Image 1 (cartoon, rainbow, N blue to C red):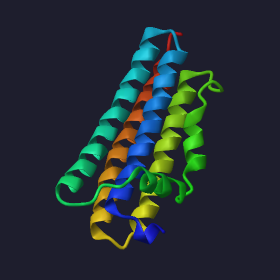
Image 2 (image 1 turned 120 degrees about the vertical axis):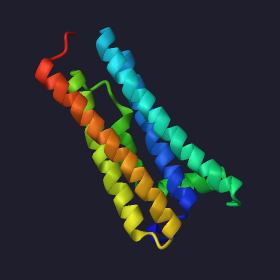
Image 3 (image 1 turned 30 degrees about the vertical axis):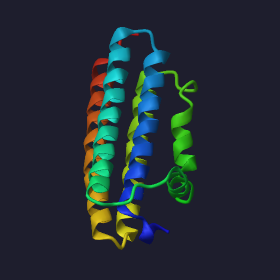
Image 4 (image 1 turned 120 degrees about the horizontal axis):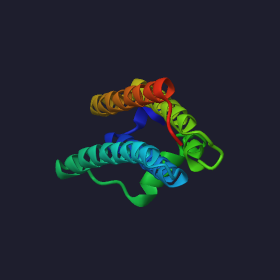
Length: 162
């Protein structure tokens, strides 16, 4: 399955991961009442949205260039067949997280796991264009992982008043 992953399917996976991240940080914004914490998570939520927009734009560019868009059924199958359900579940529940630092740690872990998934997808792909897309996605995710790590470092050094 992985070796036959199309460029559009790879982008659908990336879009779904970013949607889940956006929802996760959106829930974090609502879970904390301190403005500085809300702003921190709102910024992270907005970054996930920007990543989603990048991947959506890449998808749209490919369709405009002649690729046949995936049907909803094809999108669903692409996501189901790759065993990502367990990964997506890590984004589901934020109510078990008490400290904002732990939200950041879960976000960093999600970014790491995303990068690992994308590396596997890239390595198994037989399509050079798909490999290029995954490399672009990996670079975006590495930037986000780095940013989260820097935020966590600041929070751990300076603390948060909540």
